[in-house]
Image 1 (cartoon, rainbow, N blue to C red):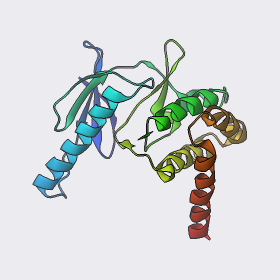
Image 2 (image 1 turned 90 degrees about the vertical axis):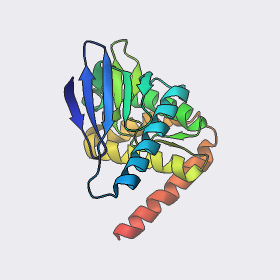
Image 3 (image 1 turned 180 degrees about the vertical axis):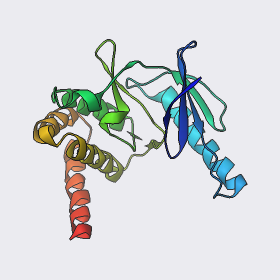
Image 4 (image 1 turned 90 degrees about the horizontal axis):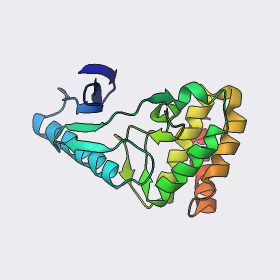
Length: 196
């Protein structure tokens, strides 16, 4: 297996021979060992369950040990981060898929253009559900969108306006769209208040 990514929570390996990606949640030496094991187990189980239930394009779950390891299908493709500046209209598809996800009451938690791939067939595939959770709260859906807007602003500032317009056009199908947009304004106002 070859290490392909390392984050704060996990190390990702590719097993090319089996066509899978292995995600190992890393032990944290600063946490009490029992607490650390419990947290890693909870997060692993939650992510595995979401991968099983989600009805949006995402890697298929192969197996999980329920403790610290998840084995998923390997999705080959380009990150949206590399393509969005050339094709801001991709953001409409992203918005449409996020609407489906939110209608299923799943919050991604790390909604960036680095966590969406363009598969070989041209379809978008969402990855990295390590911070995802289930919620019916309008606030959580608004914060998810706020995170995506921040990703656009920092990585895709040249096409920000067009990409955001496309994203919102795709997201408009979401249940409670108006309420979520109103809460998004409140979330962003709180952020501005803190900065000021």
